[in-house]
Amino acid sequence: MSVLIDIILAILAVYLAIQCLLAPRLPQTMFLFFAFGLALALAWVRLGAVDVAIAEAAIAAGFLGVLMIDALRDFSHALNKRQGNPTDNQKTLSGNGTKLPWLPGVALGLGLGLFLLIALEAIWKMPDGGGLTVLAGEMLPVSGVGNPVTAVLLNYRGYDTWLEIGVILMALLAIVATGGTEVYRRPGMAARDPLLRQVILFFTPILFLFGAFLLYAGKAAPGGAFQAAVLWGAMGILLHLGGWPVFAVIPRWLRQLILALGLGAFLLMGFLFMAGGGALFEYPPAHAGVLILIVETLAAISIAAALTAIYTLFNQMNEEPDQADSTN
Amino acid sequence: MTITELMTVILLVVGCFFFLAGTLGVLRFPDLFSRLHALTKADNLGLGFIAAGMALHIASPWAALKIFFIWFFTLLASSTSCYLIARFQRGQDQAGKRKEGA
Image (tube, rainbow over all chains, first blue to last red):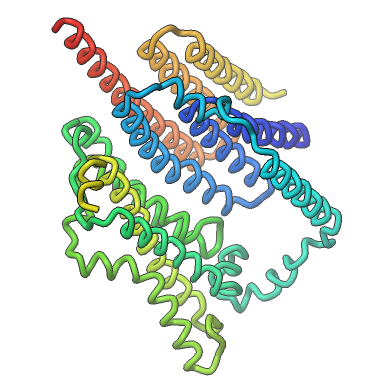
């Protein structure tokens, strides 16, 4: 029975991916992509990787979804404004109007074939006992946490996670660089709706509590900084949509401090360990649990702030594309 | 098969039926408002039945409470988004009518 569920899930994921690539219109592509993300999240649950499933559902289907819908609105605005020849646009979008050049096609085919071969080889050569699982389990008592995923992310491979936090900050910097402005404008229409505002006010403390729970639960169960950060980021985005621009009321220096906090504190701690005679991210086993919780909390705050800032910046760029053009 | 299992199966099947009916409604109904009606009404009822079935199956008061809250939050979020979409569409329709009248 469970094999049947797995097979259906695998077929569904591949089917949705193909449909997503072949969908003729942009909204269809987008919603098929959400469905694909949810199917992937279910697949991760079936594989026993609940941490990844939460991250996949929250980031791919949740946060990315908000960004994509926002981008789609902007895109349809631009199309409406042009009013030139809508059928032409449709044609180029679906690829019917243009001939497929053969050289990129061959290169793409070769690349895909190579990728398939490597994937097959990886499955063929899968080590017995799941590779490094045993080693990760053995070192768990000195890592300071009870959840092997958190131990890998924050302790064994802290350098990786530190860089990941940096990547999010880099994305925000790139958006600021291309968007150019530092004003977090109030959103227009939705803010006037009393029902939406009430519902957002109702959900805000729940989101905060659930994020804090995920953050703390990450010590012993699925959860952790990134999952908590998406929930807190969702809180910021919802408040922004409801007409409370949380980011605008915070002074500029404090905003920048919050954004850099996670990356900075993590690195500072790493250097302190080095000064104490260890490696860069080598926690002293006696205090590892507390230190990891501190790092995770600061990282979650920073990532949540970065996600909120990314959305509000995009949202504001979409509100007035003309003015943004004229200032550049 | 105990009476609890039988009840669970019945609740799950009824829930799935409502989901199926809602999906059919979204695919077949002519305009946005009736589609929204099919989607939110049927899905909330379907999710409610499935949640009740799962709560009965797990048979722990804490889990039942958590499942109830999942259903409640979904209800709140989906009816709010339904209202927002319907309001947007009504605004569009009225704007269109005004344009036609002028």
